[in-house]
Image (cartoon, rainbow, N blue to C red):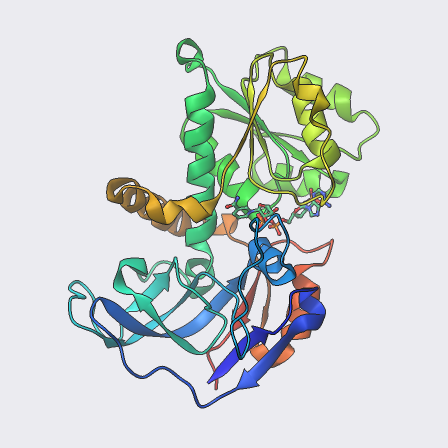
Length: 340
Ligand SMILES: NC(=O)c1ccc[n+]([C@@H]2O[C@H](COP(=O)([O-])OP(=O)(O)OC[C@H]3O[C@@H](n4cnc5c(N)ncnc54)[C@H](OP(=O)(O)O)[C@@H]3O)[C@@H](O)[C@H]2O)c1
């Protein structure tokens, strides 16, 4: 069995290696399934975990003897089922999340983490549909709860990191919920790309010469009670400037990698709420089921919102990591475990 491991925390381009072992799982317990992986995505969160960044968790993820295998979701098929796994059959094509260490040929996952994938959803989309949709749904719920109850009619949300995988889904879900998104990206070329995809949605580029004016024009004097931030640093600060007094900034990421000046929020009585998909597994079953249905709907109806930024077999792990950290990448990079 091939597995991608790291034995120390650090830069993913340098610390990861591919190991060929004879330790493929063969047995499953009650409520478990053995899945053969086809594709596993490389998410930003995976890179943060490999690096042992505080953006991943207060303590870096534990590295067991023999190395830690990253990856929390993927797509594949069921090879073996334990008892109490009603509703699934061997051979079913399934997406899985939360799953621990998906960057390998096969693994055992709880049946409660399996989602059967309907034929209309491509493997490349199914592989990355759960984590980011769950994240986007947590962001939306948090944002919704932050809008004053008498202002829920005509809502405008400004979002940074709008070209990111999570950012795209946030935009889509806002649109489906009848909310007006205003998207902030870095470059003018990125703004043009997003504009071509969704011409009716305002996009502004922080690198444009008149960024602040462009943003004010897009907002058009409306109250912005919620900002959604996946970047931090100067992008957060720009968001804080346009979010209403007493408004809320929902932060889910730090793509910019820079520290954030929170002094801006004090005179404006704003709130910052951090959210993590790490809490999703503990949500009530009805909410989780509903989020999975949302992921399946987005994947089926809007596969363009799950772009692929490259597909690499495990032996090309260095290239895969270079691609997933490239400044010019669009889309999620996938690890391809289909061939042996
Ligand atoms: N809280 C959670 O549970 C959770 C879950 C999933 C992801 N995340 C976090 O959410 C963030 C987005 O993840 P993702 O997978 O959606 O990202 P992604 O798809 O990898 O994002 C790529 C985009 O980010 C923008 N970007 C890259 N570097 C940037 C920088 N230095 N400053 C500003 N923008 C930059 C670029 O857009 P431009 O076109 O604008 O250049 C690029 O197109 C990450 O911080 C990730 O760790 C958090």
